[in-house]
Every structure is written in structure tokens, then in C-alpha cells.
Image 1 (cartoon, rainbow, N blue to C red):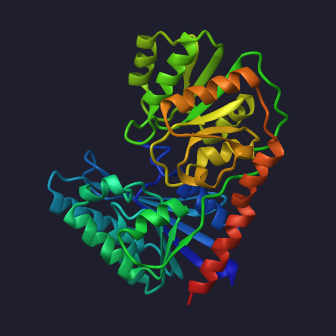
Image 2: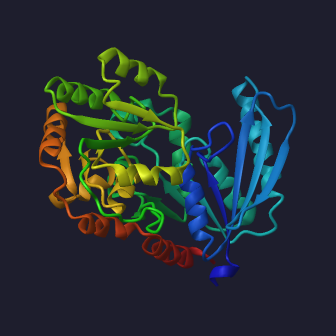
Length: 371
């Protein structure tokens, strides 16, 4: 059955020329499923400079992609209509689909429902977004609440990428939710022998979004360590605009110990993991955190807040911190004592998210839902 099943993937986040890293995990998930199934990804893009509807088709070695670029009106009602027309044009290019997988409810969740009805097939809805956390509940518009309710009603199966996200989603619904995490390429993120650098090398990879990533907290700890006279370097890899944080580093006088890199391709991050003595994550919230998983797969210990998959980490994997004082203390201790973790133990934890393990879970779910 596997190779004959045709799966259509839709997503509210997906890479585009303007946002090449947005939702890149969805693209990687499509490539993973293409090992067993025929995969088509349909993405609609609103462009205020576009006067008509432009359809682009592409076929990689892994799966097919259909992109429909459409006008972007200043009127919300007209924008919705333009989006519907673009989706319909894309759907009409596809003859038959056995299953729709829709990623991330807001803001394109309505497309998942329309695709399900268009092909009269099952829908699996998978969530990655951070908008289910408690402090965001009051921000939900009436439209988004209605959209989520409709999506729950029309989904044959609901998936969250972590137990943390599942728990948060349950405060919005009482539906059955399965947990399947993101995967990491164990061959790409290979294990290499760690040799302690003369000067401790820390690594942080994120968008530096102050709403969740808490970059200021990391800089504050770096300043405290710098003022203590401890020697270290921090490399920050970011695929977003980090100019304000680079200016902040200059303002704090930390240019000698903090360097910024990026944007870079996903594959290029591997060398940074290999060169690092430890990986830092000081986020206030994460639904999964693929960067933690990548660090562990390369045998790099982590200093992290208890977010995403860090809820399942043990002391043998790194240090869990809560406050800035905790982070400063953990980094300082690491600078003084060096590498004391087993790379094999770190990688063993990450292996539960290998391509084979995650693909196996998806195959079981798909085969249980395809008619």
C-alpha cells in the first residue's frame, strides 16, 4: 500500500523565497514521508505585488511541490477570497489524494478542511505552534476559535509534536491527541569525538524572538560571566534579522566573546554543533525544540530551560535551569570543569527521534486512517 498512497501536505508555515527558513521542518517531514508514500505539497503565498495568479510546479528527488502565488488585497474579505481561489487552483491540479496532512492551525487551517472535502478523504491535523500556551489564550480572536473548533470537528486524527504541546492543547479541547515528535537525520548530525576547547565554546541557535527565546537573558548571563573574568565564547546562529541584538552586544561590551552567524543553510549548522562544548537554550516556551535534539544527536550537552523535549531530559544529558542566576552558574561551572558528559548517552536519547523511529510511527498512523 505504501508507495501507492498519495498524501497532500498543507501548512500555515512553509519555506518561500521571502522566508526560506519558515516551516522548514514541514519540508523535511515531507521528504521523510516520501520514503514510503507519494507526496505533494501545496503552498499558497499572498503577494501584494502580484496582479494575477501564478502557479509554479516543481519536483525534487523526494516529492512534488505546487506553489500558487496570488494577489494580496488590503481588504480582509477580499484577501480570504483570493486565498480560496489560489487553493482551488492548486487542488484542481491534483487528480487524486488518499490523505491530507495539515500542519499548524493558524492561519491556514481552513485550507485543510477544504482539501479534505475536495478529495473526500481523511485529514490528519498536526500542530507545532506555540499559541496554545496559557498566556496566549486571551489573545485568541473569535475567528481563530471558530477555525480551531471547525478543524477539530473535521480532523480524523490530531497530532501534537510533544507532550508539552498536547497538554496545552487539551485546555482548548477534549479531543484525543497523539504525540509524534519531529525527526532528526542521524547521519547528517553525526557523532564526533569531543575535545575540550582551550576556551569554552557555547552555541545558541534560534530566531532570537524575544517573545519566546529570551535572548536578553542569555546576554545578561554572558555579561555576568565576563565581569567575573571567565574566558568563553558564544556563537549565536540566527536566520532572522539579529541587528538589534548585535547592537546590544556592542552596548554591553561583549563583542570579544559573542559572535553572530547567519542566515545559513540547515546543513551548515552541523559544524557549529561539533565545535561547541555545550549548547544553550534559555527559552520561555518551546513546543518541541529541534535544536536541542540536533545538539544531543551530535553528542553536545545542553544547558536549557525545561521546555519542549527538555521535559524528558535527565542530568546525564545536561543541566536544566530556571533563572538567570541558574544559567550563569551552569555556564560558569561548565567553563571551570569542562566536558563531563557521555556523548553516547546524549545521542542515545536523541535516537528515539531518528528518521526510522518517527517514520514508523507515521506509517502506523497513516495506514490506520487511509480508507
